[in-house]
Image (cartoon, rainbow, N blue to C red):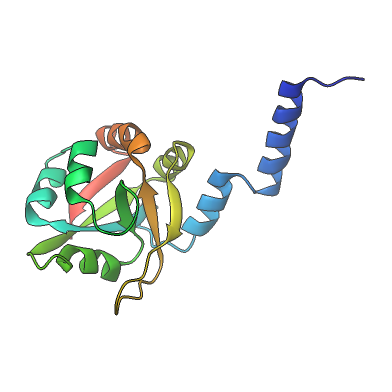
Length: 161
């Protein structure tokens, strides 16, 4: 009996999802260590300058042009959410300007959709005298539209810390 290529790929996907080895399953497994609110939203932190914080709190979407301007010397172009407050504090103050920390609260559905759109959890790059705990959720520019839509539907909430 012959099995077509599409059917084999579908079977592989079913097997992987049963074994918990899909990117979404791996991310959800990693997310179990992340603090949650009383209503089960995952808590992430983002350190930034005051002007950017005000814009984000007022609903500014993630945009590539802004990401290019705010880019740090390390890491890929994108938007970063830390699982630990201290990491966000470091990035809020690293440039020597007055910064602040924002809380990002994500539903399980939002996290799953972001992972499906290309976001990943990864270790945070250490720096000179900086040994960051936890992970960061990296949002690449290709996922900005998904992130912005999830904010509009309140699956992602942004709060001042």
